Image (cartoon, rainbow, N blue to C red; front, side):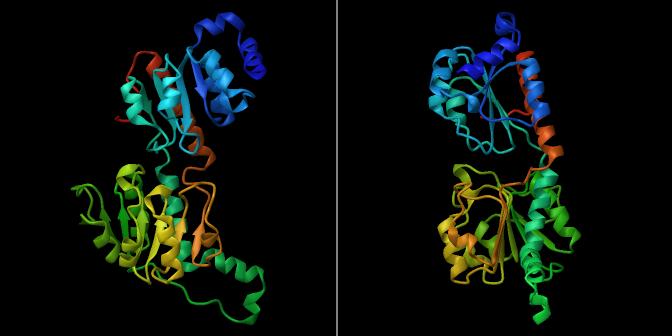
Length: 332
């Protein structure tokens, strides 16, 4: 509690207390963007509070905004109910499956996110994973470092040219992945809610059919109830023993136990995963599998992109409190 009041005093005391809107930040932005947030708002850093409950009890009726993050704690009906003045939630991240949109809508709370900015970085991670599972990049690195090259050549790997990349979710990130895969002379097909007339790729209305026709099944869809465990044992078997799964979407899209079972049974060739069902807890079976490339949910994790995301969070708050439309609203 002392941390909060120290900040309160250094931010100008009672004058700023009355004039600045109060924002509850659940996790820090990068330093420059956090400083920008501090400059414009009275910020309560919840992660720094020794007694979170006391802060919410004593300051809850002043909090008009929440800054949340895609990889942070959930913003559910309970915390929304405890903040009677809450008007806006500004999410740091394109995904928002940690937010209870129904509870926010019921309270008239608007929600923003930070889409678009992270498209290229996330697509790059998808291709990094794809290239690594196809050409065994990380395994090859270990092979050289361990001195195994002196004992013989590295095993043959898989060519990308002529292979089929099946993309589940053809939004901006899906399109960016398609462009990169096409540059490797891969054939592109996709599955989404409906076909898109402005892209030249083959459309599949069924995920199982997409998997069956793919050498690499790349998940770039949204998370949430609609795609929960969309990729199960049936889909993995359709992908087949020469097929690879790439997931840069959400861990919830894959039924993780089924993935482990499919890998152990040799039903798919391997996987490249940037997201997991219970982050940061990754099943030991995946960690110990040589056919799996693991990445710690870093799709947007570049200094440049994270900075732009933070600025967009602040821009959304500025727009809302100026009585303007959110820059990047989330439809409830």
